[in-house]
Image 1 (tube, rainbow, N blue to C red):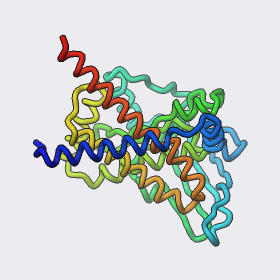
Image 2 (image 1 turned 30 degrees about the vertical axis):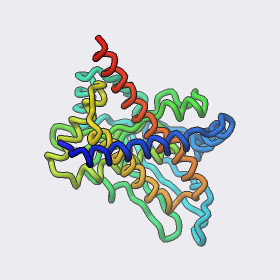
Image 3 (image 1 turned 90 degrees about the vertical axis):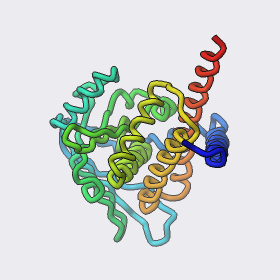
Length: 275
């Protein structure tokens, strides 16, 4: 139970992050279209097959001495036991399950620029990582930005699973992946009781149930923490201007969507109280 002082601090934090998100996402439509196109542009013309590997050059960076970089992704279409378990849980919750033909299991991902190297296996060796291709190739850049998502869940044996609906051969897709990995890294270090508490909060949010100020703060802090993790890791391979666009398109837009949902929940509560 929060004290009045703690509740005020939570409410001030929520108002500050809401104002920041609204400011950052309030860019002119023309600017949004341009940023969306650049973020969702595929960095290679090589298509995703049922299995294989794909390599592409990373965009130029403004980091001195960091010219040239490459990303290599190894993948297949195998649906492992972990994803089958996760699909069953999604079905029970009434969530849409991605068609098998649109799924790619990411077996390995390595980004390297000069002496800098990031290996997905070093970050989440126990993770099952899947990409949901969906029909993004037929979407406009604006639709791609509006329709991406990332999810992380646990299977029955405790093995984490990450699902990303975005093309990983794009800046947007990579940023969504690293955001979800940020959640994974945090969850891995959490006490089981704290982890269970956060899961309960997110379930309440999904069901549009009333949340206290500290519960709302918990969600926003978790999202900002995961985004900070993504930016920290991508900063070694992408320039500042690109990361700024990702901040506006993905990070702040995501924060704003949570605040919008909080507002909807509060309105529902108000309507019920009038009855």
